[in-house]
Length: 76
Image (cartoon, rainbow, N blue to C red; front, side, top):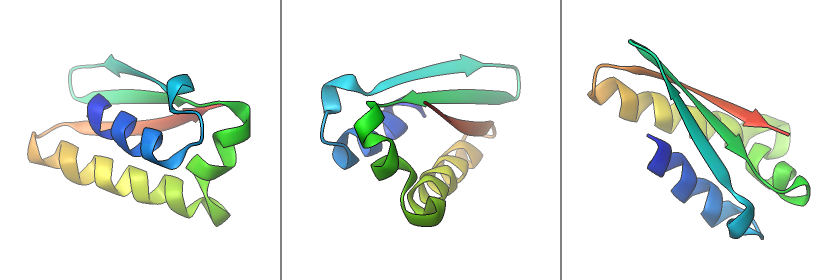
């Protein structure tokens, strides 16, 4: 899951070197924390949060295939 979010985020931003993804795993749920450069935050969130919502939808679909639950947190 971590690699999926990292791949998508690096494709969206101007500074792909500053993309940091951290995964905190629990028994059933994983929390994926995404950090990007301050100037790229708007690109990751998108208009009215559409891009972030799309990333969360893809993450949910991918995590359902492996019978887990994943949550995406975008950290400023």
